[in-house]
Amino acid sequence: MGYRKISMLLCFFFFVIGCKKKDCEEVIDQVYVYPIEAAKGKSFDERTEMFKIPEQTLHCLSTDALIKSCISYPEMRLMWTMSDLQGGFDKVNAMCNGFGELFGRGEKYQGLINLYKHLSFNQDWKSYSDLENGRYMDNIVRHELIIAQYEILNDLTSPEKIELFQLTLDNQKKKYALAHQYWGLDGMATTCAILSRIMYLDKYQPLIEEYNNNKLMLINVANILILDSDVVNKTMSLSEDYLKILKNK
Image (cartoon, rainbow, N blue to C red; front, side, top):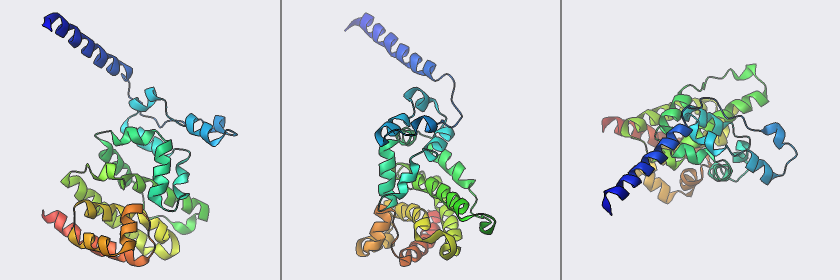
């Protein structure tokens, strides 16, 4: 092959790397502004294309801005239109190119957990209208639905897993206290999914047995759908026990 060819290949390699760095000399730390007004009156397919984040912008968004851009995706509301939340997320994921970029980021968990930590679960419900309370809950579920994806959970380190498990269980308890008045089974599905999926991935035997013998638990883990309050109670009970195990490892 010779030194000349090797030198040329190396020059080409560093040229390409240099171009990539030049493309993103400035990180974009602002949420992407979707062309919502321009998309009005367009067909569904046309809107989907219009709402794709341009590649040049997509790769240069900071992880924080990227997460917020995914959460504010105009068609994110479609997560509620399928028979279960996992199916809803899969539909949105196929439309929004932000999630693929996010799942490939090494710092995706840190960005998500920082935002999740700052969500308030102590809403003064009576001070707001039903519509405002609905938007408040929807925002929380959006964050949790992204965190519940295996692309996030599979990459957790042990400290990250403990941190997320503890925070999610605490938030689930807050939801549970107001389940009848506000959250309902649908509102608790994402917190329960994060907990049950972590236990499932870790092959926690009591959860695995429940998963294999109780179709409703299987649906909770696989589909992010709760059809019976017993699944909530069982998930919380198992989570209390498993958190102790996690902390003692």
